[in-house]
Image (cartoon, rainbow, N blue to C red; front, side):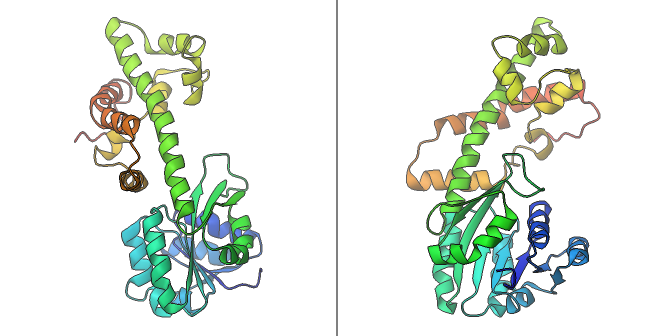
Amino acid sequence: MNDIKVGFIGLGNMGITMARALVKHGIIPTVYDLRQEPVDELVSMGAKSANSCKEVAEVSEVIISMVWDIPQTDEVIFGTNGVWEGIREGSIIIITSSIGPDYCQDLYEKAKEKKVRVADCAVSGGMPAIDNRPSCLMIGGDDDVIQKCWPLFEAMGEYPLHLGGIGMGQAHKLVDNMMARHFGTVTRLCLIEGLNFGLKVGLDIEKMMKVAGVSAFSRGVKSVGLEGGFNEKRIVETIRSPMPLLGRGGRVNELNYAIELAEKVGAPMPLFHLSDELDTKTVYDSYYELMKKYLPDQPTRRV
């Protein structure tokens, strides 16, 4: 399997980590990215480089795409000098971007025109990563394709899981992220709301956290990583919402994909919608007030 010709497109934070893992496991990919720096790093480790996505496809049996969203994935595959122009019959495309099951299923059908196979492999670093690899790979695709590519998955992640047909890896990632966001957001919102309440009563933020750390809310404090060593700045930084930095329109793409999927299958999500509303409006404003007081040098953007 180490002799298989592998192409890797997209060397961002996660992509370069996965490509490095391939090289470390003796699998030498041909890599491409719009930026030269990560390409040079991989080449210095022994990888080969290409000048376009088309060129990657021309020399690869398995092409792994790890870019940001659906528009970028479309550009990689169907754009000028894209994968579609260079791919050969019998090749395999693996989509590792978190873009939802629908896109992968549509690509799976379209690829039949060229007698090309498609699999999806959503990645997560929710557990401590081993050797700087993503800890969990959620994989969807036909059994024979996954079996052929299994050594790649074992190299790229600590826990590769084949979860069903095409798109099922993506679906698992969206559901898992939604649950993780529920848990993390609700806990963080409770802290933000409670700390603002206490400040208005006249309490000290560090003393509030010392009490919370050994009393009824101790589990919540531990879940956000605030065990011991409390100081004002660390407390406010730890319960940071992404919204003051990104703005209320800054929700990550995969959460939007998850909402679309939930609506498509008729799954009610009242808790998510409530926490999302609070996170981007009422409690967003409360956190903004905490940032102004305790993190005056941090960038904020109210929208």
